[in-house]
Amino acid sequence: MELEGQWWKGELAEDIYQALRYKELRLPAYKGQSPQLSLRRYFADLIAIVSNRFKLCPAARHLAVYLLDLFMDRYDISVQQLHMVALSCLLLASKFEEREDRVPKLETLNSLGCMSSMNLVLTKQALLHMELLLLESFQWNLYLPTAAHFIEYYLPVAVNETDLHDGWPMACMEKTMLYMSKYADYFLEVSLQDHAFLRFVPSLVAAACVAASRVILRLSPSWPPRFQRLSAYSWEQLLPCVERLLIAHDSDVKEASKPKCQQPSAPPAQTVYPVPGQSVSLHQYMQRPNTQYMQQNQPVVLSAQGPATYLTHTASAAPLRLGQTQNMDAKLNMPNMAYQAYPCFDR
Image (cartoon, rainbow, N blue to C red; front, side, top):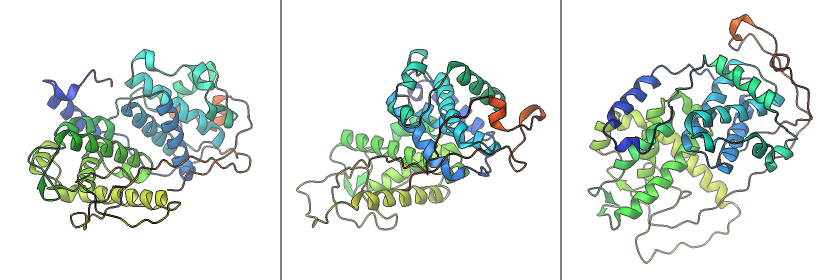
């Protein structure tokens, strides 16, 4: 579903948006029944790392994680094969969302440091086999809207000159738009890290990302009437998702602040906007003083455990297509390699 250029500014923007809203109501059901659900965070992060390395668009990254979620939900897959499944999902999504010259090449993919750390070497035949299996599983339909598709439609009107910052007119519209874009991207990534957000339709998650960004930036009203008309969501409908996003945000702030020494906060000389990582409460954001926090990137640490165990297809997951019931390792006919299972990252 490649949307050329800035589609949200064209004459067909509303028609495209309505088509996406129609399609999201027919997305495959997600039950959260994968036996490897505890590893889901790790593989979502793996997709994000590789995606960022190749500078793929957010839509490709979100589609890849969604394909992985659906596939894991239907099959009991060994940890060994999950690495192949995750990377194949990313390649399929990039072929669907990106230009051909931006799709990761096999040689470049194998040269990444994370591949050697996993003792993983991909072959053309194995990738093609896995991609075919994925396409058959999804009935060759990759037209699956994600929150990353809807956010592009919402962001151009996320900030308006009539909005107030801390009850006062905004001093710089461009600066506010820049922070809004950064926060929306941050909350989009937060929504990828927890499968609980799959209980909400993608358009609602995208709208909640904008609403949560406005809460953090202390813009009022938090959910203006223009957004209710545009998205057809009320504040009450968004509230459960917004609260999840803000709870995750506050958890990230606490985690990032652990190694830092406590320093007395002094009021800034001028009005500033926070950066992703500033703690805020949904009920108290209007009363909080302006405090500027430094953004801190946490290193990703992969701690190895014992050898991977190989799991077979179970009756609790959806059956393989065409009545096939053999395990995934046998179906893929891939040799056993020295893989190791990694725990998912703790927030």
